[in-house]
Length: 103
Image (cartoon, rainbow, N blue to C red):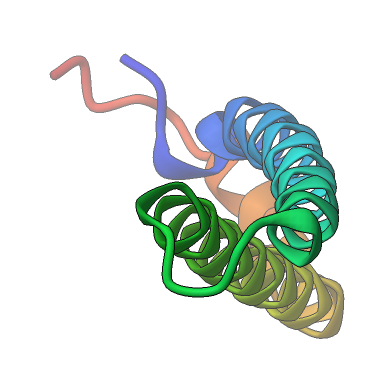
C-alpha cells in the first residue's frame, strides 16, 4: 500500500493535466466571447437572435472568468507546495525509510 507521500507524483500529474485543460477551456471561452460579441454587434437590437448571442457571450465570459480563478487556485496550491517542500521532504524520507508494520 502506498503512503500519502507516494501519491504526490500522481497528484502533481493530475494538477498539471487539469491546468492544461483549464487553459484550453479559458482560451476557447475567450474566443467564443469575442466571436459572439462581433456577431451581436451586427444584429438588430431587440431581435431574438441578438438576445441569444448576447446570452452566449455572457456564458463565455463567465466560463473564462471561472477558468482563470481555477488556474489561480492551482498556482496558489503549487506555490504552497514549494514553500512546504523543505518541511515535507525530510518527513517523506523518514517515512520511506521506516520499517513497514506489515499492514
